[in-house]
Image 1 (cartoon, rainbow, N blue to C red):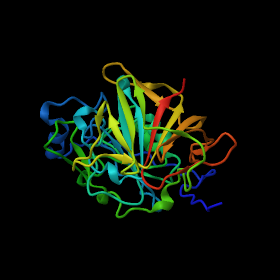
Image 2 (tube, rainbow, N blue to C red):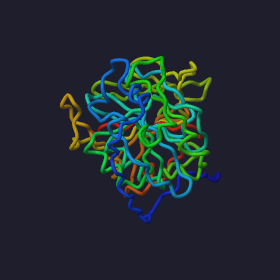
Image 3 (tube, helix red, strand yellow):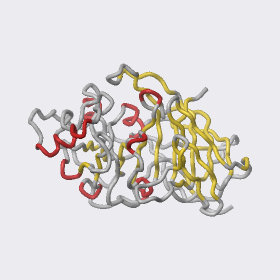
Length: 334
């Protein structure tokens, strides 16, 4: 049996460091940032407080090297994305109105720029508990959600707390034009050991079904992954169109996980009255793992929020991913 590299180690119960609640700043931010958040006649951030309104004080510094997680806009007006191809893991989730958002997680490399950056959701806090005090970069959040973010064991960085790390681009209307310079939040990539996801990389599992493409549908969005023999990757499509980066490169994943989870209503709504879905990532269920042109029906389990997610075959054998970028798309379990 070939040795298997376990990159994302499972986490047991860690010491939980209570974060000091950051006081909301009442002072007005600079005119440049204000103009960037409200200019262009664009809508607000789905009813969430904008970066200038939800300014947070400086969050506690991360204790030791950890990942950078960036919450990304995925509306049609936000595409193409910048810097997503450098992420180690890309998570996709459903948000208000049946649309989708992405979260890109960086550990082994940091791109020069990432974006467009958008607002955080309650589900993000549970998802990020698997990492040791990650840095979460986002544009803002609902006023009622901010205290939960303040208390979460993470380092929260918005344009209000780190204005030098963010800038507005001129090629897209607000709010779809906020970009992050990662090196202004963390000095260097923390390395592969920071990916405490539970993922394993190595030889492909036996069996599976030859598959050329798979689509995941939300009420108002969809993701399609098409196998490319020439690239040895799953090419990403969004809402019926090829997904590319800002420099014209096609987005592609080495492994795709379609993870079937419970999606329920949360206590939050947008300004139109749409409920914010809460994606439960702790628990167990079914998943489909796509790698090497084949689809594998597997089980997933995440016993505690501080654990990574384990994927196993029916007989309990751990499932290995292909080396390279992993996409995890959360789909509602039937």
